[in-house]
Image (cartoon, rainbow over all chains, first blue to last red; front, side):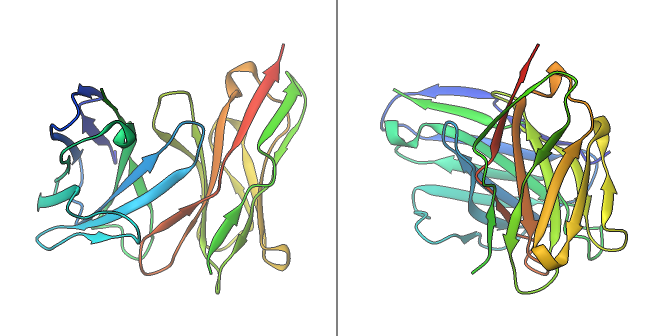
Length: 118
Length: 113
């Protein structure tokens, strides 16, 4: 149980275009999902917290107009990188918190999406 | 401020040798603690977690970790390393109530045959 998927696993886009990444909880409902960014050989940096039916909460220094997050259902959150540039190239990982898990703050992680902007 | 420190960026051990990866945290209360493993180009796999109770936690793949409140540590151990354990290991602290995770910088493990 507690599987999180991401689509696509890899994407290459041209500079100036937008790309959408999907994060789905497959066997549980997730009112809260998280988006992380990981640069090569570095740790995960939390970008934003995605809450179903409300606006995402962005971490300090993350451009909310560039990284659009939509959490329209209890099983799907999307991250759209708008007007992508080469410096946006990174590994993006989502995680989801099981709404039925009570107070235990465990997140389940997706396999990640490798974005390359040319 | 909340933080997680993994002092060792790289560790190299011989196959069959014991392993200990260090993790220290700074948090105002007892946090939730996690260890994850990441293979190149892959997502995170949970090795073990600590929420409360017994301070020695058993995980998958023969790993264990011990929570030491007095030292603010949650070190990961394995008695005999296998070549397949070569990967990046991340310690994480879960902030109670906000559901946010703070990750350490990671330790890259290399296993010599």
